[in-house]
Image 1 (cartoon, chains in turn blue, cyan):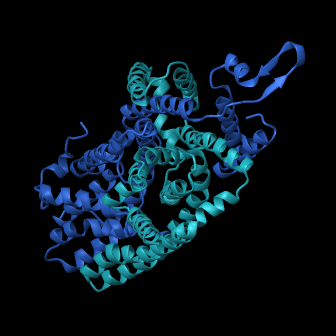
Image 2: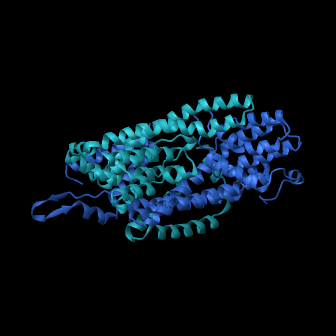
Image 3: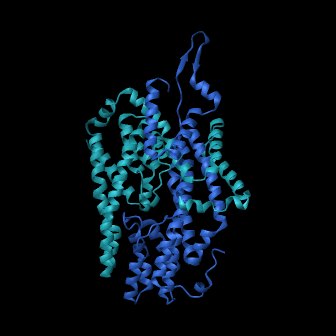
Length: 282
Length: 258
């Protein structure tokens, strides 16, 4: 249903060929970040990416091309992979407009501005917090063993992300505005977010269990009764007791602490380590 | 001396290429590749990979939301990995040294994006004149040239100072032993920061029990991460499919607001 063309838009032919649209996708995906700036974000990158298509669309219409260029140069920022659906739809709208459909320029601008926030929300969650960390944690295991398989990390990640990006781009280009709304309102998205969250949590837990290390080497001598070894004691409570303590402690600090930052948490860990070393606890 | 100049140049160029965010750039941003290449130059690919992976782990939850990079793992890795080889640091100590350089990298990133504003305003003028080539120059060529000077020269200077005349070794030797031991320990705890950032950003508190399941399963049954990932994916699919409709509804909307 998401691939079905909008009835009104599907009737007309395309000016842009398949390869025009594909090259435009590559240009935006790979090059949009080069001119990113603090005030205007990826605006210029989007314009430079879409410009060959605009030139083709407004071949004989200097004034139209200029307006389109100003329009696409507007401030724009969204997540680069899943968010490509917005630019795909924008390209479709530009094409419709160039072919004479009754679309006002401000409609395209408003569409982009209103959709980039929600898509960035979904994109950052799925890509930044789920797909990339899971991919990283899988290849971390290989790298920690010194296996060269870890070098596949980047190619595999790129393949997944840009594969998804292209699917979203085509979704946006073929379906227009409607496709974006369908994605944002789709019930299946909730299930994917929950499922990805479960997998993310499991992977983070496994990663923490394997690589967060802190061991108590302290020994207390209690005379005739022998000695108490902290590490043995803690292990009897729970395997990985101390790492779990600093994880849970850190979590509560970050959740509840006022003005808590990751950097301050690192500082706290440093203090714990220094004190622990000085009293020979670790 | 030739070795120092060669390595400093390589690191400086690498940081430049990694920072311009192009397809090639993404390859250069990968700390595993970084570790393997620098490791190969010091004759120990395995140690390089381990160093890269240790630093990568601390930056797991670092996501550039709104392209605001809170801390720059490229700079952290590129400076800490060679230093670790020079001074014979263990991965934990290397990670502790990498953190401040990561913060420095974020400063460079902000500088770059501030300067790029000039090219944006230039492009607006170019649109006025309908000068297509000038738009491309402002979009691609000028930012890359600017970044070359912004990034390469300071990084070259930092690496050159550290590496020449055994400065790195001298600085690290000056650190007292108890502090070095603490830093080794700290290296074991810092991955917790990246993992916690990730857990919090996943943002679904009712899923927290899965974190503890993952933690304990790996602590009790040692297995490869990939093996665990396959199992985790199966569990996630089963649960997500079988969840009742009302308990998943709105899951993605929660994210948008956060």
